Amino acid sequence: MKSKSKVIPFEEIKLDKFSDKRGTICVLNKSKQYNFEIKRIYFFQNKKNDIIRGFHSQKKNHCIFVPVYGKFKIKLNFKDKTYNRVISAASKKAIYIGPGVWREILTVNKTFSCFIINSKFYDKKDYNFVK
Figure 1: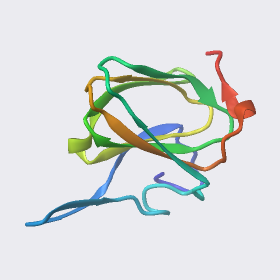
Figure 2 (figure 1 turned 30 degrees about the horizontal axis):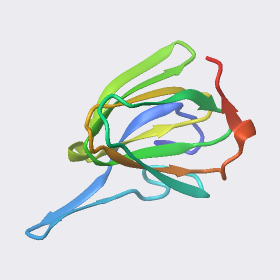
Figure 3 (figure 1 turned 60 degrees about the vertical axis):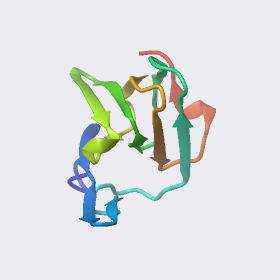
């Protein structure tokens, strides 16, 4: 998040990247790229192309999707703003998604994997499945 006082419903985050002859390390730093306490981390991995995930928003949870391998298409909607992008692990970018943002995620690689950090523990009541 770019500002503590301004709520940004969704944005692309450039990960800090450090490379040398051994490879690359990508980093998310609190207060620089996000500003919430991490309560939960989960992963997903696919073994098929064109898997669709999401089709919901969350009422209070802030999250960041960080691709580890492969790429995905993401469509986010918040009020009258729509965001469509392809995000790949090679891009060294992540996606911040704030509360109230509708998400639809389509995997485009058979072996796609991603981890998601969250500001809240899982609570079924926090999910909104109606757009």
